[in-house]
Amino acid sequence: MSTDTRHQSARDIVAVLPDRAHDVARLQTLAEGGEPVITVVGKYNHGKSRLLNELIGQDVFAVADRRETVALADSLHRGVRWLDAPGLDADVASEDDRHALRAAWLESDIRLFVHAAKEGELDASELALLGELQDDGARTQRQTLFVLTQVDQLASDVDLESVSSAIGVQMPGVALNAVSATRHRKGLEGGKALLLEKSGIPAMRGVLEAALARVPVARRHEAVRLFDEIHEALLQVRTEQESELAKLRHAQQQQRQTFEQGLKAVIEKVSGNIGAMLAALDSDHALIPDTARDAYAITAGKLERAHIQIGYSRACIEIDSFLAGHGVTGVPQKQQTVAHALNSVMVAVMGVSVKFRKDLQRMFCEASGRERLQREFIHYYELSADRQALRESIVETESLIAGSARALAALHALKADA
Ligand SMILES: Nc1nc2c(ncn2[C@@H]2O[C@H](COP(=O)(O)OP(=O)(O)OP(=O)(O)O)[C@@H](O)[C@H]2O)c(=O)[nH]1
Ligand SMILES: [Mg+2]
Image (spheres, helix red, strand yellow):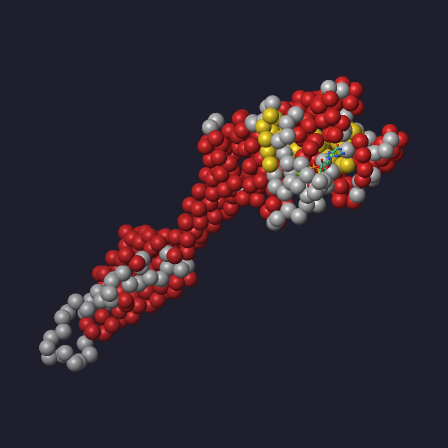
């Protein structure tokens, strides 16, 4: 898998789980492989940078008798990335820097916890940090090695004994790796094998070799743990999305069914009323045109047309109030005319008015007429704002589910790589 593909995979996962960005980045790093990382943790001036230099065998990192290291610095030697870090109590510039420092400590494969022998016991902040690193180690199998530095500063082996046992009480079972950078340097420069030996650095290198050998297993363990956690979280999100989709689809069907049934009942009811009205009429006067003479007179034809008009209006009002109750009011934008009064679904389906028996009959008393009404009102129902919004929610939820599927596939791809 290329770096770009891995980046894309990580983005796909974070798009679904923004809160897990950090874990995803870590999994990505594990997938990328890369050299094991060794870092130092401890208070300032305890000899962290110098310890790394002695272990590497070169003066890579700055050493001084004051607060020296203020930012992370790394250096690649013999297949290991050595990461020098500021002291635990150094005034690190910002919250972000402190966060980066903590992440560097936590994410290094091997942490060398550095404590200068002359300081005696561990203080509360050191104990807290050591505890945190050990808890993390129990979870991730990342290792923390305790290094007691500057042991040459102690007057005697008796003093070393008493500092060691005091720390042993604070941290039961902890293996102390006692070293002296000064002795190591002098031993090297003077070619003194005994001093080199007594510096503890060669022994420390042996301990590091063994710790490095365990890194691949620890990384696999961590990758599996991260995979499992992220996988679980993704499955949970997908389950929630799927149940949301089922809920929306159910609502969509339910609403449609309720509308169809209600509409059918209303059409049947008004058809019954109109049928009864038409049946009560005798010979058809509406078809007899009014003459100029009776332009202002009340004629049988006029009465009948008015009668039919009223029956029709009642039917319209009944259907219209049912439609309004289901959010079906205006016609869709693209169907609207400049005459606002004509922009109603009623007008679109039923026309402006009906004056003749045969029209009412066709509309309400014939099955094909009623079916047309049913069909066309359903058409406008589906175009109503609420129904559209529901459809959009469904499309949106479907695309979220597709995102989760992408994230799951990306996670599997990353795991295969890790
Ligand atoms: N006597 C003696 N001095 C040491 C030893 N190791 C380091 N020092 C001295 O202690 C001082 C601090 O060493 P550094 O390695 O810079 O300490 P640090 O922990 O990296 O300090 P910060 O970067 O400020 O956090 C320097 O003057 C070193 O020379 C040692 O083993 N023996
Ligand atoms: Mg330093």
